[in-house]
Length: 509
Image 1 (cartoon, one colour):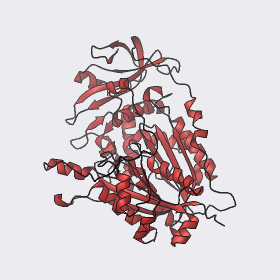
Image 2 (cartoon, helix red, strand yellow):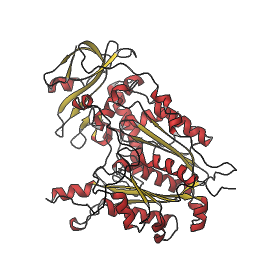
Image 3 (cartoon, rainbow, N blue to C red):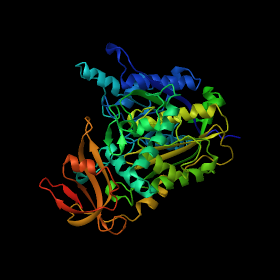
Image 4 (cartoon, one colour):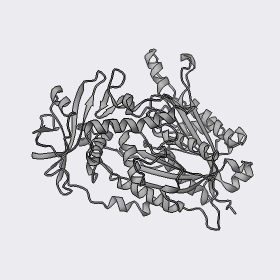
């Protein structure tokens, strides 16, 4: 017997539009409205049912186009009495919202919830190119309320050295991961290409993919006129794509409410396990740059709640903004590099594309479709925000959760101290003397020329957990910068000094 207070996902909607007439371009709000209506249709409920929503949450757009997009969306749907919220930036938000509101529904605090998000950055780009500034604002009597507090992802010191652009930060993780894996630069470049070639195979079959194109490992890994380096070793084809027009929406409620609304049971998705964790916050605090203790803990808690293991999972979507996120996530989940299961159900952020923070809502929607087509299978969605910083996971299935005990998740605050209490290397903003490189990356401009080096190192051995860590750049010499891409520099010695502009400079030996 399924308890009436069991939370379920009942409807999903996805929208992807391209090549619209310039005088009729969709806005993010247009896309969210369409996705919400599709979710109602998917749940087999009448569209006017959306007026009875008691909660509407919008995942923040990178181009947040209005003062209060959640309230505006609720108004368009007729849900004038709904409580409305906006999430801060963070790609973990869609799965984190599903986890949070499943708990709210299970305890009766919420009844009928819409989660939605969208970007129309491709349309905005087209407008700007035509000489028109996008103005997608709609009137609101107040600013949106944030569902949880926002917090800067970087310090001023990190930002000054270039550690704030996502591509740069994930490239730093990538080079550390490659060294830890014991691969040469050329070998690892092709390994990344092979990994993401599999993602393109999935994207090529997806109706909502922005780039439904199969690419070979060599096409992805090797540079060329259309595939320059962005932050070494990442080529353009390895980067998350948010210059899209996409939206996704989810409808959640309880079993009892679904029965009252007439939602067929074959639409129901059960959240068997979930967890949310946060890494040591700033990049300079991480224990290392090739693993994620927070993701490992997230996986342990989600599997324990579900009473399952990774071997029981049929379908997987690992958050896939860059190769390092996938590889480190795969390790944290206990998956081997030779595991035959695809690591995505969408094709991933570089190929399916994603509405910035909202990509994982597409992953959940795709997962729902796949699981409904294979009743009884289990699917795992992981989501990541920041710089491998904020993590959420959900284990979904059409398999009912039955029994006398109410659905309940452990409060993330009960296990987060396991991460917060981890030891971290000492750090200085004013290093001097000799040190070793712990990881590094080289940034490139659109013409394919190197522009800067970002280095994280230690005053002492790079692998000594007690050695003091520092952040630095290298001299802006193109020959030097290109040379820094030709060999493994992890552990390479050098001298650190402070430049006139306040940045630290590392001179490789």
